[in-house]
Length: 116
Length: 109
Image 1 (cartoon, chains in turn green, red):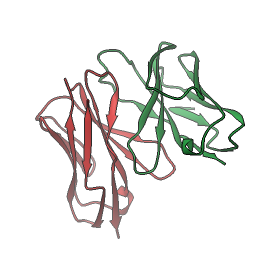
Image 2 (image 1 turned 135 degrees about the vertical axis):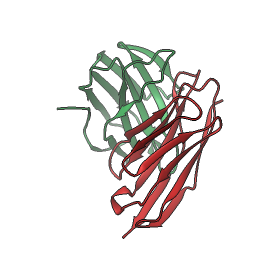
Image 3 (image 1 turned 120 degrees about the vertical axis):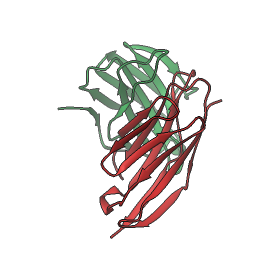
């Protein structure tokens, strides 16, 4: 496989459920990202990992919990979500996430999350 | 705070009718200006990076240009398969990408 792969592609869950989103990149990159994309709104950066260390956390509610076990895998653990959390969750990777940050990010096709 | 504004929000063109999409940015210490294409149900697909004013890049019917305040994505003789949402993003000293809301382009046959 090539590029950035996200699973599942679609997820429907109740507000009391616990689920996890998975992302895997096959590009040899060192940085990985989680974004939230809601209709008609810009992509919102949630978390950044560089060399498996979390370097950004943009005031995301604690009901979202990221995990980066190695430079190729990224998870987003979900629990007690709210209806407003329904959105497309995108994973991305780039060569680096340091102060240079002039490298393009490459995205997966996302997980469409619906909260009942 | 970095800001990126894209216009128009939506654009409908006839096949072959050339036009331009606008991306206005306010960023401290621009490190890169990125263009992406996003099809329905898919993630953004990287198109171009521009690093300094005056730079231009081309790919098939698309050409991206950059000034100190704006970037333009010029589409020459578009085809229906160019229909997509085009996203612009800037990277500055904040060390993260700031995205615009996108322009939804529809090219009619």
